[in-house]
Amino acid sequence: MIAKISELVPLGPLHNPAHLKGIEVGLELLSDVPHVAVFDTAFFQDLPEEAARYALKRDVADQYSIRRYGAHGTSHQFVSGEVSRMLGRDDLKQIVLHLGNGASASAVVAGHAVDTSMGLTPLEGLVMGGRTGDIDPAAVFHLARVAGMSADEIDYLFNRESGMKGLAGDNDMREVWKRIDAGEQNARDAMDIYLHRLVKYVGAYTAVMGGLDALTFTAGIGENDSRLRSELIERLGFMGVQLDADKNAVRSGDGRIISTPDSAIAVLVYPTNEELAIARQAMTLV
View (cartoon, helix red, strand yellow):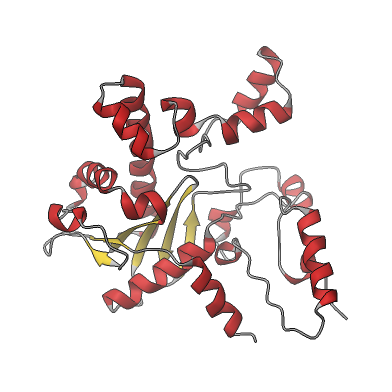
């Protein structure tokens, strides 16, 4: 008998039932082929209660499965594990910045996630291509009452028309930098808001972990935008972190350290490989 996917792993309220039904049909059609389901939230299923639970009335939160689920977990697990191997330490206090059109941060201690920026949905946390990231929840009530917007309209606004797109007019960071260089103040403000949010999360996660050994950039923006990395590290200079400008400027598909030897914190760029991470996890079960 084939178990339902929902019985195999805590999913949360936002996994599309139609997608899960499709998976179950696939299992039935290929019943003689081993199947492994790898969920993007799995790395964060064991977050400490203090990080996973919102300060929402407990019985409501429990009844409706409202907690921090996170996302990009496959990437955060892969990158943090590779950085540990690269630096030859399994006790690292790490922050991984997965920066793409969707963006998230994680705090990882000795291989275990202790916090992450995305929450019940991928909307929470960092400024993203089209998503607001952190925003006062009462903004929803305000827009409903004052602007007469429906739940669906607010959902679309927060997830599709906000973030860098809403602030700078473009969700492609290369175009945002061009606008900055052309003197567009809205673009410069958008970048400063983006960086400000990153600084807040790096500072908060360093405090949560009681220190920081390694800060790693990954995903499309994290791996390729040397200018953004430089501006962020400059803002973190008070922590004793120092960037090697020449190493930071290198474009490479290899994991590499871009901080100076005397930097108080190792700064790295490590390309994520979620397909490899999924394959590795599947191989442990097949």
